[in-house]
Image (cartoon, rainbow, N blue to C red; front, side, top):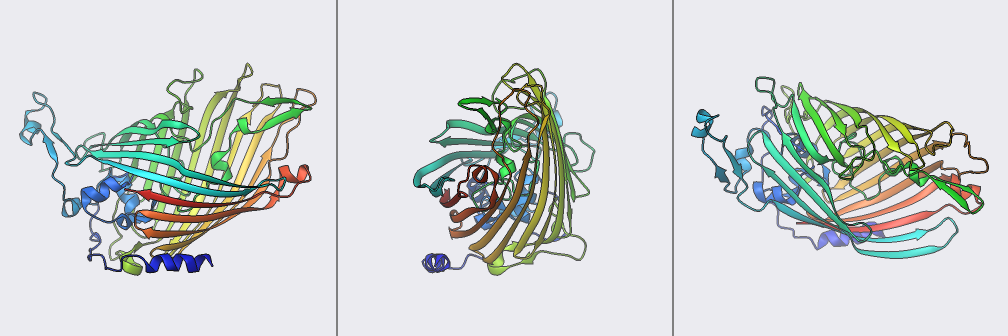
Length: 467
């Protein structure tokens, strides 16, 4: 029935074919990028959203190269660009430097975009009660990005939601080719409030077509509540691995196929640190086959085009990250935490399959003299493109949490172990208008089982518009 409805929507789409566009030549290899791919770039380069996305915000291989190349297409960027820029100085200023200011440019158009997410949720709680919620809108984003020259670019993301109000999610400056003379894109610097991109696989800005994140992406120690009768004990450690935070990060590309990053982060999303230490992290990603991360193909290879000219790939991607930090518990102590992750992802034409594992540990999270809390997640995701405008999605996750012995007598916590299944369908009503239907059910759910309750279930419908 759902597919019938989606097909009916498709029939109403504009059937006028898009102008033919040649994809980037196989021998082009100069690239600069970050998600930061938004509708402002469709206006800047006069190209459709599907040039860089399968179903926005999910990036295709060219969109990821564009992201890593500081918002520029590989080398023939000038062939796509149509807007006139505002020069800030001329080429002669380079010869006069340091007696003149190094020249740059401003976008000819205001580089802003808006994204509106409208949600409907149907939820059945563990106790069996069903609730229908309209979140219209759920979130509204103001997005901005600009390129100043071949070495400087910037990105801004602000978000308004009914729950959190208005907040700045990202505001960063990216400096590319930090040291002259080293290979292009080998060493860059990112400064500001930013996404750390520990994984690109299942990241909300790069690789999420459906709505829901995995459990490990939202897990916080503060969510684990200890109870002793009517008394409760809760840590104030609200750290989440994928949260954006103030950071100084060095990153780059090696050989076009190895991407690396390492940085020092605040450890909190707020403007002030909540302790006297800083967190550190690293990440690495290797891409085998297909379009390289720098936008090039191996000799003799070239782009693979799917239906209606959609750019597809034949590749294997492997990623790894490590994160080390400290957080106050709010109970007179401090907890150290660390996490590691690894994943492998296979893209073969319309198929996108991946599996990953994340492990984390937090020492004495309640300052109770107990041991360490550990968690781990084994997760997988599969997506298939039935048509250029219709994708199917399936996510699976086994999340387990091991609690330490609690030194405070009498306190206990409900089991947190669960196995979730999330099927979904994503339809592009237009290139910039996305309809998502996603469900969630559980094969096992420790908390509801411990209380003798039925397992919870959820259904979400999202209408996501960007312009």
